[in-house]
Image (tube, rainbow, N blue to C red; front, top):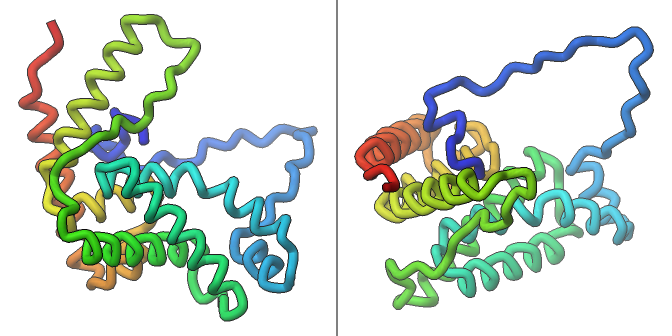
Length: 211
C-alpha cells in the first residue's frame, strides 16, 4: 500500500488517461479471475496457480496490517487459501473473485481472533519493507518514517474501521463489495471508511517531522 495514498491525499481515484496509438501492440489476453476459478473447478491446476500469484501479495499485506502480527497473518493467509481450494467444487461466479476471496479471508480472521483470545494490541510487523533500488538513502528514510507513522495510526483505529480502510486501499474493493465482505450495509461501510480516513489524516497531520 502506498503510504501517501490517493485516499489520504483526498484525491479521487485516478481516471484512465489512455492515448490510443495508430499501431499499438496487441495486448496479451489476461483471463478473468472468475474464469480461472471455474477452470480450476474443472481440474486446471495451472489456473489456480495463476490466481494465487495474482492475489497473494495484496491479500497478505491486507492480513498483515489487519492481524498486526506476522505469525497470525501467515496462519490466516494459509487458512483462507485452503478454504478457497476446498470451495472450488461449489464455486459460482455470483460476484467478483476478489470479493469472494476477501470475504473468505475476513471470516478466517474473525475465526482466528475468536480462537485466540489473547490476540491483542502488540505488533511485530513492518509491511512494505522492500526498498526501491531507485530511491536515494534520504528518500528511503523518509518512506520508512512515513510507513511507521501510518502503521501507528492504523493500529489506533477500531477494528471495523481499520478493516474497511484496508479493504478499500489494499484490496481495491468498492463500498458495495466491502459491505458484502464485512456483512454490513453499504452506508455502514461508507461511514466506517469516512471515520477511518478522518482519523488517519488527523493522526498523520499531528505526527512530528523527522529531525
